[in-house]
Length: 172
Image (cartoon, rainbow, N blue to C red; front, side):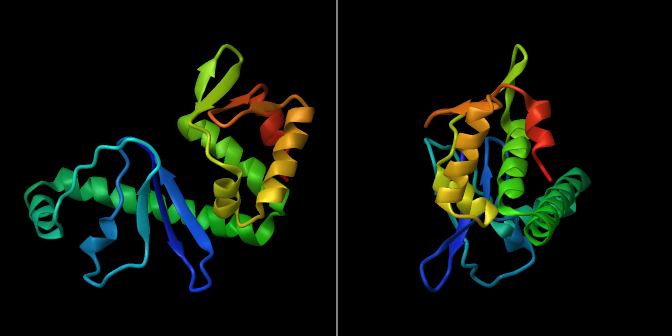
């Protein structure tokens, strides 16, 4: 199932760090820090988890080099993802960040249906806003503009990208 990883500011504002899908790993920072973290993990749908204690995981890493390499790749890809998000926040406007998020969502979770792409279990406008550091109203406006341009269509359950090339052209 899908799991939302985030934290809440002292003022109660939610920051979504990522939304993970089946087979993805979280909590790996327990390997390098014993302190409590402020992040939370919230299952967005029925989810099965496999929990491994940090001591057991450290033993597995010592015994099997492939486990060590796996976690290096996991941590490295998360660093790259955060670097890309930071660059997007600094160098791109709100609209471009939202469109870029949609395009990356299609690349990660989309399924090709003919010439179109479908993403099932589409997230809420507020969650997109929290992931892109924008407002819910801005997300709604951008999604409606993309729908009016016949680039996408969406409802609460799915996002259908009618033309992925046109969607990526919208990123400035």
